[in-house]
Image (cartoon, rainbow, N blue to C red):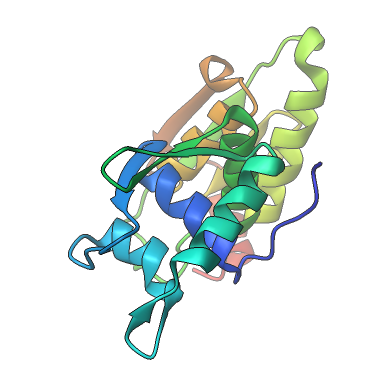
Length: 190
């Protein structure tokens, strides 16, 4: 049951907020507290005319559980225990992977980031997916497994490489100048 979830939907917001909470969350469905950002991110959409629509929340939770993206149970005190499943975590990480981008608006710090990777042949699919994704991010290929960018990319590269299970095969070097730098400055409009 792997149908897509719309990014503007309530079930998407539930999964996103449970993932942000570390994959596990307990919330009160009887008298939800709007204090914490994560909890208000989940229950905020279920208020209509200042009344909490508990049935709508439970219906969406049941649908997520049926799709094996989230597990939930009602505790004896009326609170709900929400746990994101492995499939739910992977789906949300895939959404994050689709949305990731570099901050190109920030003033350049004068350092180039060289991203080198040497991924073994048995992880060829991951290697090619990583190469495509960093190309889409705007990193420029210097060689087949060497890309360059003037923009901060460490967190993004770490996330992408970890997602594909090849983080130990990636190296980021910081370079202040190199032969052919003028062409790269022109390429990146610096």
